[in-house]
Length: 232
View 1 (cartoon, rainbow, N blue to C red):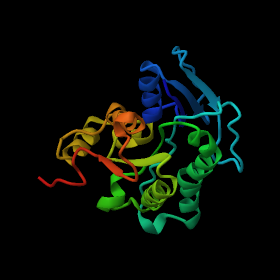
View 2: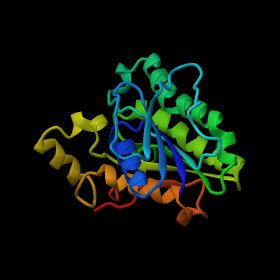
View 3: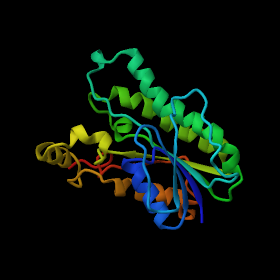
View 4: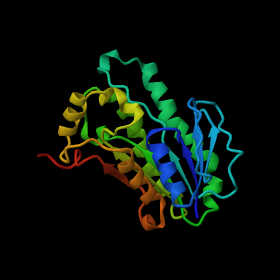
């Protein structure tokens, strides 16, 4: 069985993935920032961690780590003129610098594993181009570049891939799906006529972590209901 670190495991996709991996028998070290969480599954252990801290300490981890998944993100949709440069920097610190500090801290533990894997998260908006998405797309575009660069640098020892979802029903996206009208309107924008679920995204992450994906690295996986590829 594998040992995984999930940054941001207290809600949304991170929580769903932690539950799925633990149910499969893997050991999960999950972190939370504000919302402390406990699990009845003995395979999941939660620890407080603020990725905005200058130095991240992972003294609770074992010497060998099978994979790390970095889930923290934000969805700030505003017109470009209303976004201050500091707002871009705040998102960049959370979504990019936090991921960089995490990876740098655990690389030695990943190199000790036989099938190490890193999973990061982007958004469909980076490839597709959507209005009011400049703030999130700047950070997530950097994540896609980081994915490809590290996939080359870490090969063949560590695989790294990125998932780019479209709108997914998570607490982070609550304001976009908080009425039947909004939910239906957003569903109709996708060729598959529904918004994503945490299970949709967690299933892809679980696959990318597994040995079934042992010949996959440096990829941006679009799990987006067909939005980035199909027009109907």
